[in-house]
Figure 1 (cartoon, rainbow, N blue to C red):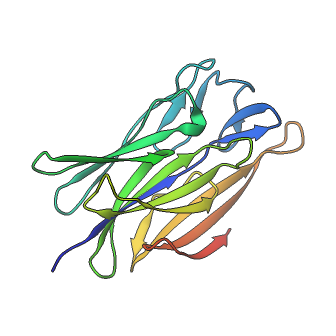
Figure 2 (figure 1 turned 120 degrees about the vertical axis):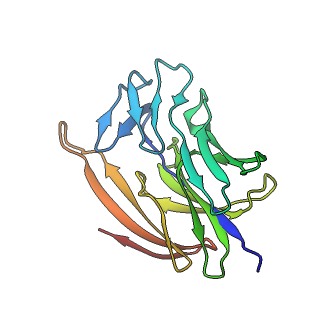
Figure 3 (figure 1 turned 180 degrees about the vertical axis):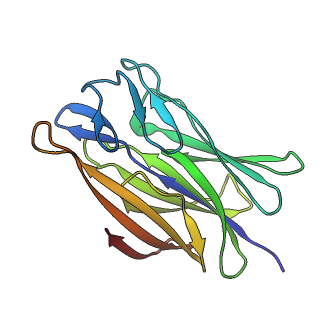
Length: 212
C-alpha cells in the first residue's frame, strides 16, 4: 500500500497598523515605538524577530519535525528588510541526505507530520503573516502532501488571529487554536484577547470555528 504524507504549516501576523504609524505587538500587548523597530519583537512562531531602526529583520529559531521514514523537515524564516514580505523555507532532508525545499509566505514554525484517514501523510506548518495598511494580521495554515515537492502548491487556509497552538491531527482533521489581541482604546488600558478553536480538514475545509 502506497503511503501518502502531508505537512501542515501555520502563519501568524504580528503587526498592527494605525493610520501612518506601524506598531509591533508581542501579546499580551507590549508595543514598540511607532515608525520603526527599536527593540525585540516576539512573535512566538518560531522565535523572536529583532529590528533596529529599519535594519534588516533577522528572525531567530527554526522548527523541526521528523516523519516516520526518517525524513527531517526544517522551517526557517528568511531575513528581509520588508516585514510584510517575510518568507520561510521548509527544507526536507531524507535519511540518505537528499534535500528538497519549498518557500512559504510568512514566518513558519511549529511543524508537524500528520496522517490522514487513508494513511496519507501531510506536513503541517504554522507561519506568521504580518499586517499591512489594508490587511489585518492573520494566520495561514499550510497543508502539504508528502513527499515534499518544490513544484507543488500547498493548500493554504486563512484563519483569524495569531499566536497559534501546536496543530494536532485526529481522524483526518487538524485542531488548532489562535488568539486575537485588541489594543485598548483607553490610554493605559489593558488589551483584550479573543481565542478561537479551529477544526480544519486535511483537504483545507474549515469544519468549525469556536470562540472562547
